[in-house]
Length: 324
Length: 82
Image (cartoon, rainbow over all chains, first blue to last red; front, side, top):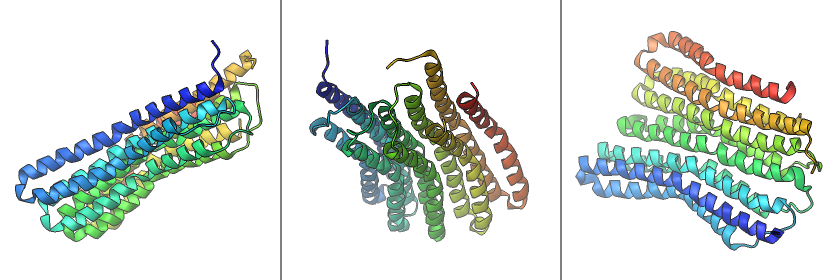
């Protein structure tokens, strides 16, 4: 049985589309379900606020949904647009784009559900703060979506770049590695950004006078939690745009693929860990505003230590790309 | 594409190094994050003991870091020694 290149590329595009929307649908569904659960509880406690809670729930869910809409877009592009079929690399491109966007939407979808849930609970507790809570929720869950946006960018760069002049052998691994690096690296920071934003919304509802501090520390914590997804993005860009010499050996492509997996998987833990630290710091600062400086210092020290293994993963993948 | 024994071993070593460091980074990242989170909460409850709490946090994190360092060592061994 001989399979021609066009057929292989089409098969890869269909498989990529399925993987993309399959994984991508998990996160947003969990996040929105959590939001709806908390909104239902809040309505049960304070039925008189049901209209406001309902509105906040829908806005929050719409933001959670955006990451899964990204996966839908990538899946539709994979299904219905023609794909270049020039070499064996063309078979890997749609798979890599699908994996990248699919994994990339997982964390952001779950994460964006947390601030929306906290905003619904908070509105029931402090109806006067509804406007502030909505703003806080929208900013917090928008920041959660940045890792998913990175994954969307890398998917489109992979789909619309011209790899025809590149040697097939190490390039296929570089492309697959690039997709996995940004996709997997988005999981932890996406989820983590949500944990921090949840604390920001809870803190605003608990202590309305500290709303401003809550949002500032929330943004600081989210920014630190996002760093590991930027490591993934960096490695993806290097893997896509670095010119690679042709090779017949197996080791060079494996090194590039491994670099992508290393930084991608390695970013998950620190992203979540740093965010847990920032979540507790935000919660403590809104309870004890006088301790702000002390708590920020402890948060930064703790987060820096938690970040270290993400940096090891970045170092190992840069060694895999540039040294060995 | 002719695959020889030495090339295959090297390829497996590279893949192993990436997997070792990647998965090895998950646990310490989450664990140290939990430690730092509880330290922030503890300072909120008892700010007078901030120094002691920070010290305990750092020692605890250093111990939690050890498995991440094992992963790093194994990854570097796979890359450069084996």
